[in-house]
Length: 216
Image 1 (cartoon, rainbow, N blue to C red):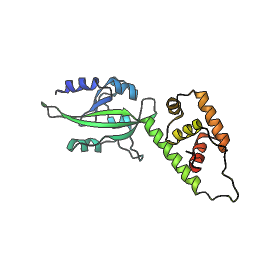
Image 2 (image 1 turned 180 degrees about the vertical axis):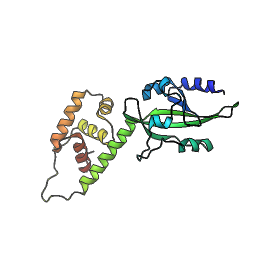
Image 3 (image 1 turned 90 degrees about the vertical axis):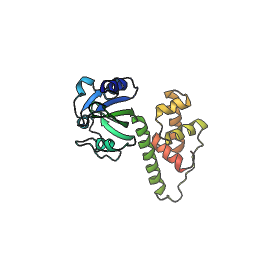
Image 4 (image 1 turned 30 degrees about the vertical axis):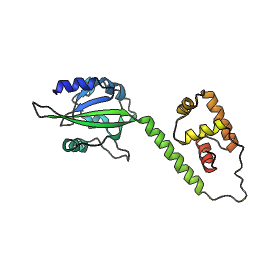
């Protein structure tokens, strides 16, 4: 497949897709990439992929840099898809899952590194929230019991229990509403009543107490 044919193929994919040459310079940028990252193709072509994205890995380590290790690795062998936190045009950071396919031009023998990127920011936020809930729960459980302190609470309704269980799984309030098919006002009412019954002051605190007391 010729270089022009590869670029046409990338333009037709629903994923954000762009091609990088052996020097790490962007030479193709499809419409989905424009939409996801906010940069027009005309503003990124022939620019350094590393400089544009300033990508970091899950541990905060810098991944996108000169003499990119990912490009060097993918030139020798196939690599698994990986998660990367990148900078968008408006300066915000977003998480993408990236797959790389190496294509060698049959005439010139030059290689292109085709990147396919999918937005996973929402998934990462859910994972972070779940981790915070788990850490807070462990911290709360480890606190010494106050002698004579009562953990008795008013029973949660079935719907209040569902709400807190979904939140404990890392779902956002919007996702909880969609799953339970309830309005924002109804969700607020459920959380208000749950906080009253548990003696808590926020949805995170309510989830932690509900987990600790075995209510969800």
